[in-house]
Length: 394
Ligand SMILES: *Cc1c(COP(=O)(O)O)cnc(C)c1O
Image (cartoon, rainbow, N blue to C red; front, side, top):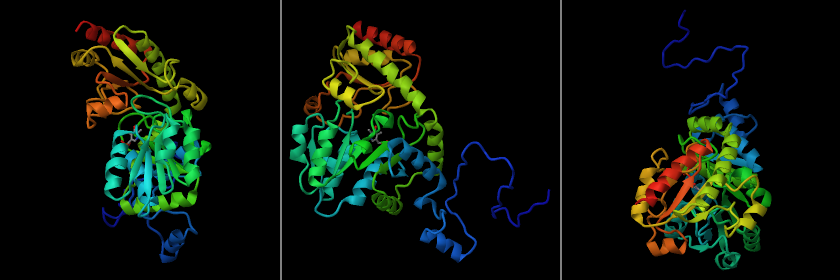
């Protein structure tokens, strides 16, 4: 075959063919080139659809963002490098000098660090509220509050946010409500339908589902606001990689099946823990003993989530024996994986808090959080049964 190239570094094109690939193409190109200056100008002016430079957007992020926007009922959405960059992008886009923010006191660890440490350092004061106690909303959300950040189900106590009351408190002062919907997923709850302005996901977790990429999504009802945020994402370099978007789109194909199985397992596992001698207390919104069971039942559809936490009886020695007994259940500080994982928040996600601060949030020393996977339930039960037995003999 004659080499059609004048140099190996000059890129060729894929020869045209009749077959359409079934799988979306991975488009790693950083740059998209055009015939002449007029054509490029038309792309920049928005008269022609096209990409220019990957930090500003690329086909894989557009495709994935439009799928997630469809799931969340968002008018516009954008992918970011990670869940944390979706949250950063929001604050960096909407805060003006003099603004303050408000946030739930139980948030993902890094989110809490951002709102109580990094943003105050930049001059944005933050007040926190208890998302399961509406009385605290009005004190924290006042005139001058520009953005409010909350989750629907908290980690690791699995308390449920009084969402309707939170929306009212935000609307009363014109604050933007950003919901981190990672735990609940759009199958469980769609915040934008119920009055939130923005919704974000750590796509790293349940939506992509295989713990092999970091990715974030941010969607909203106001496409002008989303354009502004997209612009900040490009400026601050918070953009998602084509490869991660492409991988996440593949994972997303099985999200519904995975989530259904994981929720089903979680409910059975919570019931199992609840009746076990070595368990002091089980936290799962699906149990009628959970303080927010009613609220969860009225708010969240299709199940009560894939996270369960429980307090193991005994001291650190029993916890160590239990964790050693979980031979095939990885100790993993993440969630939403196909595999079941455990963590002890007191030594992982909440280790930076003092013991008193943890206890105030309800996080006892021997609290174990389980991110329930999609394995056969009998296997999960057998493994936890033997780990609990080991703890019981210690
Ligand atoms: C993991 C997680 C994040 C952060 O997402 P990254 O993709 O790790 O940046 C934010 N919120 C919640 C609830 C999470 O579980």
